[in-house]
Image 1: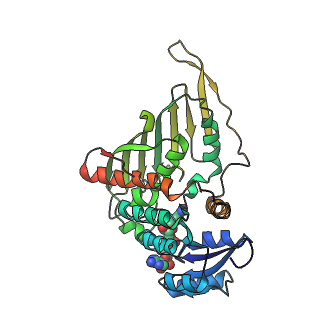
Image 2: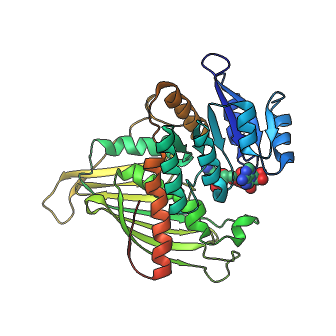
Image 3: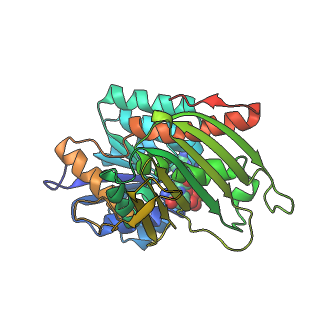
Amino acid sequence: MAKKGTLRAVLVGCGGMSRAWLSAAAERSDVDIVGLVDIDEKNAQSRADEYGLDGAHIGTDLKVVLGEADPDVVFDVTIPSAHTNVTVTALKHGCHVLGEKPLADSMANARRSLRAAQQAGKIYAVIQNRRYNPNIRRLRRLLAKKPLGQLTTVNCDFYIGAHFGGFRDRMEHVLLLDMAIHTFDQARLITGADPVSVYCQEWNPAGSWYDHDASAICLFEMSDGLVFTYRGSWCAEGLNTSWECDWRIVGTKGSALWDGGEGIRAQAVRKGGGFHAEMRDLAVPELSARDRVGGHAGLIDEFVHCVRRGRTPETVCTDNVKSLAMVFAAIESAKKGRKVAVKY
Ligand SMILES: NC(=O)c1ccc[n+]([C@@H]2O[C@H](COP(=O)([O-])OP(=O)(O)OC[C@H]3O[C@@H](n4cnc5c(N)ncnc54)[C@H](O)[C@@H]3O)[C@@H](O)[C@H]2O)c1
């Protein structure tokens, strides 16, 4: 490390999302961006100009820039098919890695990255910014003391008519791979449960502006017998849900609703015995200073803290791989037309 306590970082992949990362890094005095890499050098140079990173090493080859800049950490903001090679290269160089979602473009590649992290003894964590959202943390705080009893059922709807007009219009499994990874990961955060099996049907609805399946319904069996259902589409005009989805959470003693924004409601049984139980409204807790929030900036903050103190981030690859496995199992189920086990 050059300045005492300052982490030297190389960022790889200087496209659209890199701005969120570089803006978050610019707010910190303990992270120096010492290198920018992109297969298209113009992209790296233009981010260096935009963020005033005059001293940063610029290049198209990660290995060369790692040799020149000697960073402590690598930020991987490349496209999904490049994540494994970038991650493994950085880990082999002795760097900790924080990478964009998804962890990898296949389970085989995910396992390569997990092995490399273990062999290097370094952290590899993944950005899942939708779990660093204040309202999901309030919901989790509400559920933590189990006022709904044992959770039995979680239903979630995602309906957004999204006209991206870019690579997503041509992409296979676009909804499951590019978006549902966030939702499945949120389901794991909300329930604390691990995935066991899934049945999924994917289709491209009539009138779709996508080349491939943009709608899906998944039925997951989770640990403890919990059932989690996901209904989603990026090709549904009108009455959009939020990007965080619409949720219903059912337990043995009550239910909760979350609209993805500030709208959280919950009721628990006050008195049973009648046709309908008598219910009471539950107070929704405020955010605590200990809650992990802040999207990309929050995740980068936690990563820096963990690198410094030798701790493990919440989205470490060995945990995040469970969310990725839900995506690939759903795709496998849709292809086979039957229920499959979620393996990770
Ligand atoms: N967390 C979120 O909410 C969120 C939102 C959008 C995108 N993303 C993720 O961020 C990542 C990047 O997405 P984007 O929208 O910035 O894409 P993009 O296409 O705008 O940018 C990707 C950049 O990576 C470069 N690149 C590709 N392969 C490379 C390689 N092997 N080495 C170096 N550079 C390489 C490209 O030239 C391009 O400049 C993806 O994994 C995407 O899923 C996350």
